Length: 166
Image (cartoon, rainbow, N blue to C red; front, side):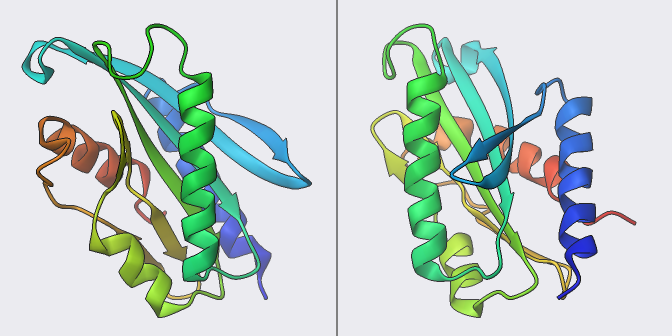
């Protein structure tokens, strides 16, 4: 396994987050270094709401469907707890890009990430599965009914944050 590929990719994501004003930082989650970036944006076209966007990324030995599902749940809980301001749903929403990067990726995990946006009340997740060996990023790029107002914004941010370097 060549950890350089995953490190290079996470460094690229960190650079994109920094350039977009997300103040990226690293935290330790049970012994796993996790990159966290966040920003808040307000748009009148979002019915006057403030959207808190978190990007939470980690390198793991292998990405499986249960692994990305659990990470998505964990990142949604983290974002809800750490967004600050008004309670979720009161003129404020939360979106998360839970990102797992590995050189061993189950194709079913990529399909799961690309399938749909994962929703909770006023919280949206667009999981990202990155196969560093194949240089492939699996990410939902659609416009779902629930959270549709934010879809273009999330598509734009996903395209900006997750390309492969070079």
